[in-house]
Image: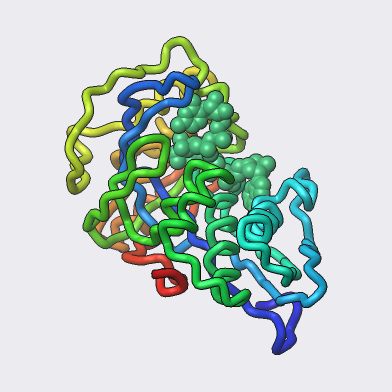
Length: 284
Ligand SMILES: C[C@@](CO)(OP(=O)(O)O)[C@H](O)COP(=O)(O)OP(=O)(O)OC[C@H]1O[C@@H](n2ccc(N)nc2=O)[C@H](O)[C@@H]1O
Ligand SMILES: Nc1ncnc2c1ncn2[C@@H]1O[C@H](COP(=O)(O)OP(=O)(O)O)[C@@H](O)[C@H]1O
């Protein structure tokens, strides 16, 4: 449902992602960690509502609790695009937030990517996809993936992409009641930082893992408890730097069964794989 039912407003999806595995394979001289990961788009999505303004203003109509309008990645993405292109148009923004924040599901990055892709069209900029991806990296390491718009083997800090075919299916996603700060996970002395690099490949759950998971579980008992609860029922893995955990199956019935067996009161939901970002055609 659009909060602003008017023909001038347009609604765009911003899907979440899961990291099917995440290996830390090294560190850059600036301290940022080099990763290898398969990023999977899922059908859980925010909706970003936008209306073009002629006066150049960027106005956020419903800021998120705890995130000032100017700090919101949607506003930052629109302003970055104005600076880079000299575009004199502006935009009204409103968000239907469905992707849990700080869950390792990339919701904020996806909102930013959707703004870049949609304004590329609404402002008539026609920037190539590669240029939008470079711009996006300045907003967050996950943004280039969403602009790339296909499931991918991702390297570097998130800027190198190889498309991969992933298996279609369903996820049970458990959301422990804790905010995991990404910097604390990357700064932990016990983090495994030298996993041998692998070649871009289809996901093999048996030979891959999330290197950030043992650290998040050690520092945040709620993550460990949720992982253990899910792992008692089905294979469980953390996404990103946490806090969410997931389990995959090609069978929706099996995932419904997993969800029904979780302990009462544990926040969890179902999501399906996506093959492609809904706005993939907005850049070429
Ligand atoms: C690990 C991932 C996988 O998708 O996790 P999620 O954010 O989805 O959980 C991302 O790459 C997260 O990247 P990004 O979202 O940019 O991380 P930020 O919160 O900006 O990073 C906070 C801090 O973590 C450290 N950091 C982050 C990413 C990285 N590749 N190496 C790092 O060392 C840096 O110290 C950075 O200042
Ligand atoms: N539009 C947005 N949606 C979500 N978070 C945002 C947004 N803009 C800025 N943020 C900030 O980014 C942080 C990380 O958000 P999110 O992308 O949801 O998590 P993660 O990086 O764990 O996947 C939030 O805690 C919030 O402070």
